[in-house]
Length: 310
Image (cartoon, rainbow, N blue to C red; front, side):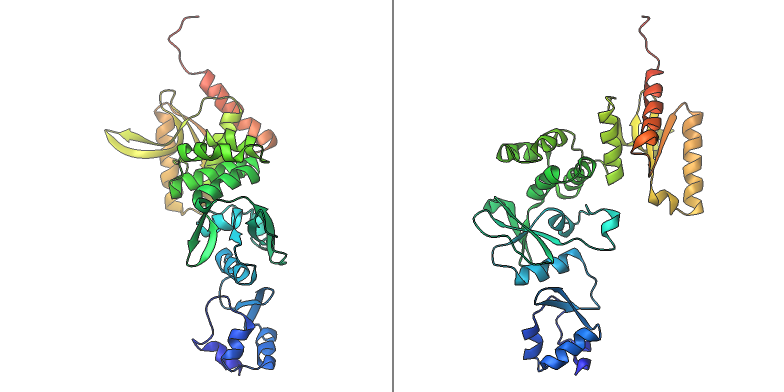
């Protein structure tokens, strides 16, 4: 009977055991499918085909299928469904529970596969994607601005601004609703720093570190012209002081030799034309390594020529 799982009859979405029994499988057949690793449980009474990737959306749909009516996917789960990854690297090996909420007057889910909470949501805070209820990009951004650690919260807000058009004005307009809520002080501060031009979480971390150091903020994604042609793009730049700040992340280490050569040529040209380059790497956001590049940046900014005599 297990050969049935290789036919289109087995759903490519979360399903209950009763659905397979209706296809003619016995309870013994069902247990054999589980034992052989052909199907797997995601939540109590919610199953999926084992050949499907365990995406956040798939797991959220499985939880929604067996949770009480009215529950909503929230926070990092909602962000992932909106295409914004806010999980830590350590959580990729063992995905955290699906984050969901019930409205304030209802009980949160107690499913082991879910992190159930209660929350005050208005109708405008909730949307549906193919029947799955989740918070809108705006509401998700606001919640993450409160709940995530500060750097990750900044990155999430910028990502929603970049990819979903969430504006500073829209965020500000909702702040009054979050009065006295845990994390709102952080949210209020970060909203004023939101910039959709930042393209990666580490760029958001970089900008936040510069802000926290009390230094003037650079312009992101700056094109430098050579003979009137936009030729070199910089992560961050102080155009007039000819100072740039660049993040060398995983994509730099994974680059081809040709890409590395072009990057060396670009930096050689910049230095030859009077630019100071501050390079930041993956572990440069805490401790002495953070202090090092901030000192370099502060010194470069202080050394800029001034027309003032004294």
